[in-house]
Length: 420
View 1 (spheres, rainbow, N blue to C red):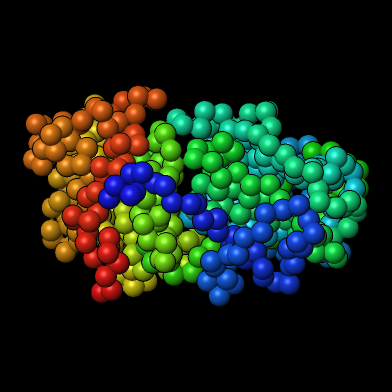
View 2: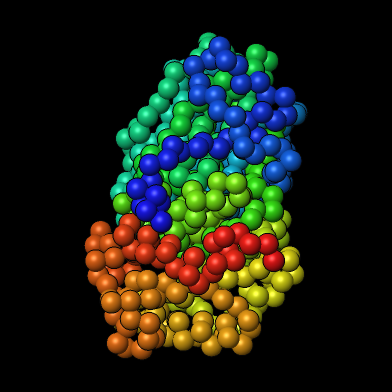
């Protein structure tokens, strides 16, 4: 366990689809080249669109060979009206770009630039640069993108008007934006892989719009892929996603992913999530990529019921996925249905009736590790963040480490990846 706490190992970057579909990443360009551990055979499509009816849009029109912008500005967007939670995701866009184009690519759930950990990137043909905007307040409830540029990089070659491929990759906490010339195969990319969400988490539907330019871009197609049949997916709300964790490498799921490099592990979590939102993920995600195991931690935002837990189990059984239902952390909410005693009593009773097990995150975060689920089970405040209210809700780095320790105790078959 100490090797996890030290976390001295080198990070391994993952580039899904980086060598697929005949795209050459030229070693003559000034980009980082890493061999992907995932190939095309490991991926499955969540979305594929090439017709205007596949998208929501304002002023874009159907054109020969694609969908064409008709004006500039954020009010003239093309939108993929899908909000995916899986944190290994690859967007591939084939399009025509004019030499004067500045194209904005924004992920947001409450309008462009706003939502739960949104992201905004750009491809500027006029200045020959790729860039990413900085997120406001990445350690707390980050709900907006600032006007400040986090970073940008110049193109490796002189790219003029023509056909291009834009790749937007989300690999856990890593964000990658890549532009590739369809004809020459030369690429340029910018990567943000720090330990916080400096440029957001690509949460929310994707918006595309022309910020500047007169030679209107034409989108040929957009595909979104993710891992097929991952071994484990950690599902939940802001606690699972890692809100207020000082270093995202210390999230429970991230620690598990680091400790199990030979297994395919994803996180599918979102701040504010409830069990109903998780159930909605089946038709758009889980039923498509079919995880082998799902580790669920939900209830801090209310909404749990035995009926919905029954539905969750049924949906998992339908795709041959083993369900683990974890106890909530010690959160002393003023709202009855969000108190850990209320939520965990329901989880305990339902799990016993349905033969489901889960990690005791309540013991991990309780003062003196008190295992009794009643009013005497109080939070160890040293394990919770004080960066945002309500206090004693989001475990900090130390709290997430304590939660992670419970996996080997409560879920040995998961922790040691025992088949069965």
